[in-house]
Image (cartoon, rainbow, N blue to C red; front, side, top):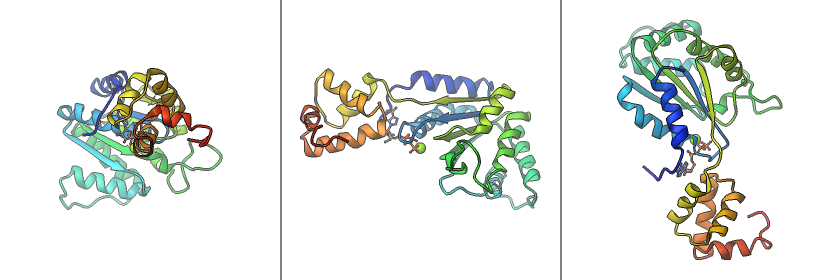
Amino acid sequence: MSAFYGRTNQLNQLQQWISKKQYSLVAILGIGGIGKTTLAVKLANNLQGEFNYIIWRNLRHAPPLKQLLVELLQFLSHQQSFKLPEDINALISSLIKCLQEHRCLIILDDAEQLLNPGAIAGYYQANYEDYGQLLRRVAQEKHQSALLLISWEKFLQLELLEQKNNTTASLTLKGLPTEEAEKILVDNGLFGNTEEWETLITRYRGNPLALNLVATTIDKYFNGSVSKFLSLKEVFPNQ
Ligand SMILES: Nc1ncnc2c1ncn2[C@@H]1O[C@H](COP(=O)(O)OP(=O)(O)OP(=O)(O)O)[C@@H](O)[C@H]1O
Ligand SMILES: [Mg+2]
């Protein structure tokens, strides 16, 4: 596993929410590259012993809900061939039954793919509204499992569920603090003084992906010198 710095409070928070069965629908939110997937992997590792099943699904290609439900049910029933219901609500009911019988953690990564990138933030794309049914029922019905959503944007529905019932919670990730972000730069072979680290980290808002990318550039073209890179800011104003 690649380096993992900081995020202690966030990890503890998420672990507590899920371990204590305080929340059954949990979201990790934040812009691209901020470290959502990395944090969720760490969380899943830490929680392994507590769950009968941990299932990770990437929604990058926005599977229709029916396809996702069938996959989840097939997995949870150990591929036994049994007749699955056709109707979405009946499929969700079958999933909830599994979530009652076993303690499962279902992680849905890149869930922003379900949302409409248009003007109104947080609404589902056309034909994906039925995911709302899944989230609502997971949040509201009784079971012993948890669904973890990872997304850039907050689903409007999550906001409503958070307000309406006490089984939904979300955590928004911000950039890494200087101390931890600095370790990423050092790992990439960079050198500089405190002020230079701070300038670079502030410029990239502590985003670990952005810092890794700029560190590669500095290592390759500036022999690892943060100072040389920063002195060129007027030549490359957007760097
Ligand atoms: N806490 C951390 N310590 C060190 N490196 C980190 C940390 N968090 C993330 N990274 C690194 O930053 C990069 C981006 O992280 P990650 O893929 O988790 O972001 P993300 O929020 O899931 O992005 P996206 O929304 O694009 O999927 C990865 O290379 C990862 O190794
Ligand atoms: Mg990710």
